[in-house]
Image 1 (cartoon, rainbow, N blue to C red):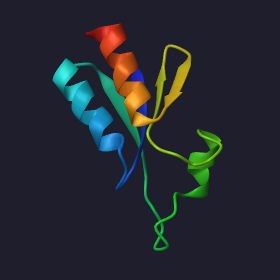
Image 2 (cartoon, rainbow, N blue to C red):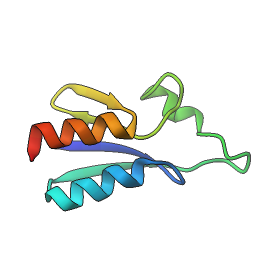
Image 3 (cartoon, one colour):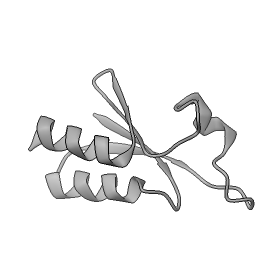
Length: 77
C-alpha cells in the first residue's frame, strides 16, 4: 500500500487527488506546519530537507509532486 507523507499547505494535495482519481489504496501520515510556517522536524526523518510530499511504495521513496505524479501514471494507470 502507498504511504503519503502529507504536509498541510503543500503540493501533496495534488498527489492525494491523483490517488483518488486512480482509485488506489493509500494511507496518509500527516504533518502540520508550525506558526513560523516551517515543516516540522519529524518530517526530516522521511526527507532530509523536510520536503513534502513524499510517497513510499514497495520500497521506493519518491519526493516532489511532479515526479510522484509521473510515477503513479507510469506504474498504475
